[in-house]
Length: 71
Image (cartoon, rainbow, N blue to C red; front, side, top):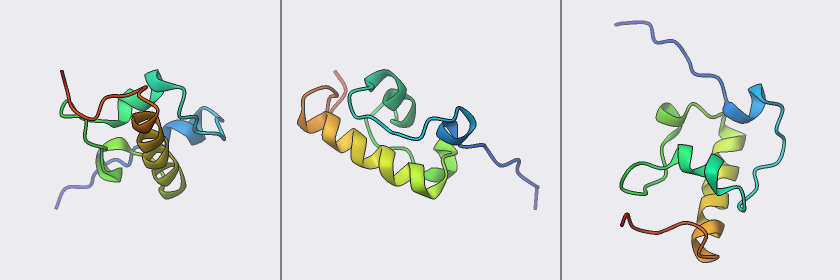
């Protein structure tokens, strides 16, 4: 097996403690081109921030800040 380099969490490295659903530009990094929420192995987030990002994306979709489907 190949040893994979682990990604560092975006929020932990930038000392951002709060994941805000209104910050759509940073949330777009964690969705695919099909607007699906990226898993932890792809996003590189820690477990705590992955849960917060998933909930923030869902809230942003409900508030019509992010799309459910690509255009």
